[in-house]
Image: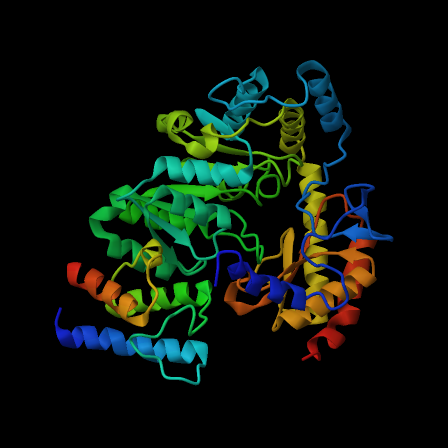
Length: 84
Length: 397
């Protein structure tokens, strides 16, 4: 995995989260999924399935327990993709 | 925000749904008259929101068995199965369930919720994987979380999606449990079991099927989807509940794998709780006997299901894909669903209201549960009332 892969993951997350939440403000790496985007659990789980398919990886939903920001989510996806 | 204030947001959302003071969730039922009628407030209502699929809540055989058990063994066991809570009735019911499914081993749990919680968390653990349908019941999700295994979801009943995720697991499939349900509780649709078994046999894995809503409903003797599809021997573990077709409370797991017996020593939801009361076990045993011989009840149930499904479809409601005892009308907004629920109650019909995120695909559901004791006239009245309310509900923004 390279930096460009990480950027690709981050860009996808920001784009998809922005469209899922219809938020006025821009989604950035530091955006908090819960307190700022108010994304509900089902939407988040469905987004994870989409990411799994885009990057051909398995992301256990229990790995999301400690995820709060978009950056933390991107780090998790990057880590799993790198190990696959 | 302190610990308790975190609950205020959900409380505010719930209160917003109570403009006329009638609580859709946890509404008190003051008196129960029969398997199909009860009193809510000062209304005598038709019960279309229970899981009493075979209509056996007042079966004389079950009531008599419960009375006798109380007289002989008292009101409760006051202990866990591991200690003083394993009576001869508990063991007998386990043998009867194993026999019913032609399996070697059977276990009884205190609730259906705990049957899934205890079976899943006992069989899989950290480092293992569970591959579950996205629309799985909360007891399955919670069992998976308790297990510490990696949880992977596939899209509801989407076999191409399931295959993709199985393939990605590679060698990990050896320690993977696949979990599906006979009938899904939200939309009432059935798992494509033949295709799931085919994928399991191609890629590997251990299969658990939850027959909570399909026990008593599907198959000649009421085993569930395994009997309807003729795939009993292909499923590794079957779980289910006593609180629907069997009209009591409790749960079970059956299997031909001897490892099931080890759950008695490792499964916390089985060990660290009081065992079911003697009356519960006795009425469940009597109900299981009625269920096995109840093909006439299943025929009546399916007549009722087919009629109501057709009436609601004709009225213009969007329904789940399969007719069955769970028939859910899908509405676009929570407000429409609440309006329909309230109007049905004003017409003396009680159904279930299910709102996002509990309902799939962001929809709101007004869910009917049909049973074998409903008369044709009752079903017709419910269908006609839904039909009458369709325009009002769908034009509401």
